[in-house]
Length: 445
Image 1 (cartoon, helix red, strand yellow):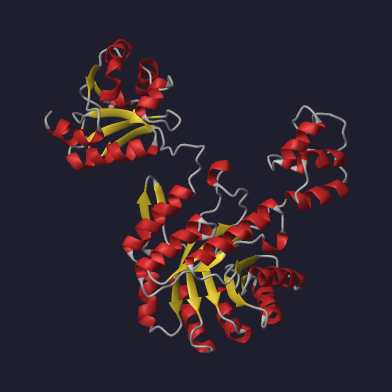
Image 2 (cartoon, one colour; image 1 turned 90 degrees about the vertical axis):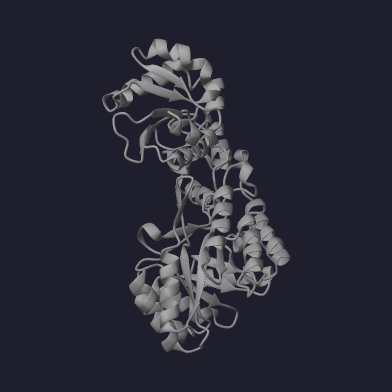
């Protein structure tokens, strides 16, 4: 059980010196209990208290990173059961399986598909995150060849190397040593040899259990063998079992501070039926799977799973925003229309999409309104005539346009008069209320 604020307070100097930035030691203790402050902020705390509080302050779910560079992915560090309580930190990793029994050309094609899986949605770049290379042959040479191929075609890309024989996996790991792969397949029978190999190769270790009880035993034994970065497959395969086991693990780690189950979860969902596979994958994404292993790359499947993951892992307390600036759509010349909207991501992408659909090269001025939509920003006093005029003047866009005309959203037509007063020499035109009317509006001008 995590320490309470009062218990933490008893370990502090209780001098109320304010060196930590808080008015009293009790206030600082409460922030520590809420994991909103660091014990390092107190310069006078004893080393013994640091050790005690340091262990308590560790994330209830250990962070684990696989891969190197910009493609590396981190899992764990989650703090809440429900997204609306705070937010989820590290999105589910999608991994695609390649078997070492597959012909080299097929394996190479799948790797290419994974590398080309990236798509942009609401300003974010979404993609398949990892390769799951499995030793179906039971022999070392095919796995070695597959890992070598992946390392050559996708250097630094997160790799999960699945094997149950440490001697088979050893040669394959030599090709990705130093790239932080995940060695997956340790169980009660091979744990010691797999731990030794993971330590030698600098790999994280994936544990395969038949139950939550066995999973907790395996993590304790792996730690005793010197491996801390662990990922757990608790053995659940059916959707109901995944929901049950993942929820129990998250609750045990967060509510009971039960360290043996405080690790990222790997969920294999491969099915012959791709629709069923996708549905089972959604259960894992919604309920705490850190890695979901898929059988293939399909655009329709990727779109559904990417959108689901994006929605769940967006911070509910911070609206998605785009950068404040004047965006060129197409290749606008001096006579091109200039429109304005707010920086709420959905608003921007819907408006920008409709402008593109019109085929009329245009400029779209996007104003920082803290991620609020047009009407909400206007009601909150963030999208006013004064602020719009200031933004237009400071943007320098008047040097790029031949006709000083600004098109405002139809929902804030009430601002047109005030804007003409604030923007001397400009013509203010009221545009459509709904974005889907923009193409017809632009073409009719």
